[in-house]
Image (tube, rainbow, N blue to C red):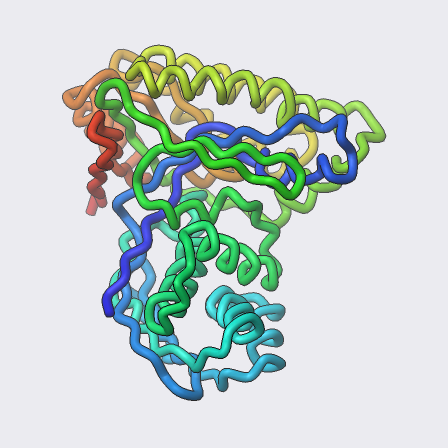
Length: 360
């Protein structure tokens, strides 16, 4: 069986997935509102059952191959490999969840192609967990819903050192824009219609960031704020982000690219004001701001912001139309040759077309 799982782009509401879960401890925290969309870049694999082992061969987006990793389908081994972290920990953690909850054998997974940028805020690790979950589901006919696949992928990733929230595994839903609302343990998913085609440029900033450090520092601001920095973080991931994200939902439904871009610019400015001080080493993001403030791009874009956990990983720009999308990519290739630009078009037909401009 052949399986494809896309990456996930968080348009608005980054970090509010895990922040909203803290409402079960502190009800004064605002619900989390996250607006996401799938990409057409992702992870491709051939999968087949194996009676006794988990066997993984993997490809990175630079073409490098990893593995094969061979693990017995035995709970203590899978748990140990997951908790150690590293490249194969996500598969091991997800396999552990299926072994614990279902009477399954193993898997043989040949991830023969990955065209999704890794560690750039596009949920490559979550996509791999969803890939493993979907393989168990389909090969062993477990009759799961997409929500259940997503939940098992989340539980699998949480066994690793990753501090992911529940937003990341929404790549299981493919490529329609989705609003996710996080209220303690509860999650509500709302699929959105798109008023008009919307055009974006997604930019790998060719920088580096430590997502685990960002998550560790920001989680220290919850569930109860004890100083001004922590109060500011809770305010941004609470009322400020909620208001901006809900306005962005309306902009997508109306197909209003200009409003969507203005909301991105506003979200970034508020993030910089309220959140950066909690983890300045990772969130100051000089490359991100250099791109967002680049004068030659301004005639072609309505606005932009960071992606995922923020930092110098990935940026997203709302461009004016298809021609502006092409021009913006040309300018980025010329002025930031180390960066990589991806086109993203959210279409009125709810189909998302993406293509990589690798800049090679």
